[in-house]
Image (cartoon, rainbow, N blue to C red; front, side, top):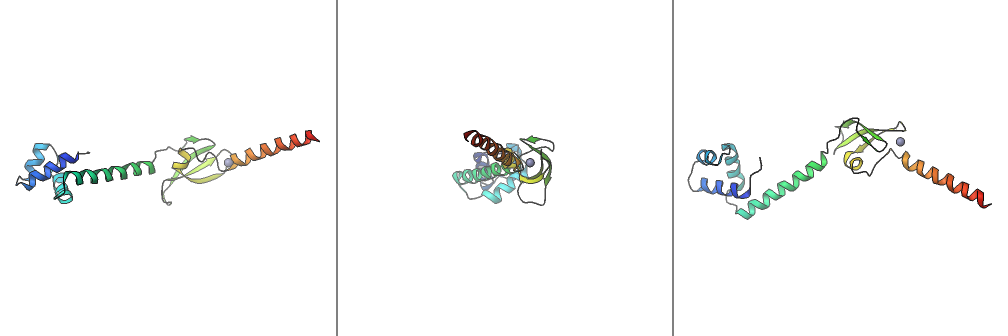
Length: 142
Ligand SMILES: [Zn+2]
């Protein structure tokens, strides 16, 4: 559950003013454990300071979400098919099989956003094609 800075601030204030955390918790329909955590974390802070702290946590969550992009095995990205996640590597890396048969380890974010579409053979193929096209062109020139 996400609570607003106001909710946290006023709950902590009420405890400071002598109300029991259990009473505050019941009235606000929040668990007593949350109130106690808030008191430890936020007691003595202004509403603004609590807001800032909450925003930092939100930012961290966004970054965390990016890291744990959900992909499924069998999902295709260009020439790459996701096989399985690699737990031993830091970050969110998966094993991908390329259409050419090669198996590579790549960061999910890169594949997901389209930076990586093949094991590298796509690029090689492209160069090979342009090389042949240029070669034919050059042949015609002579
Ligand atoms: Zn390939």
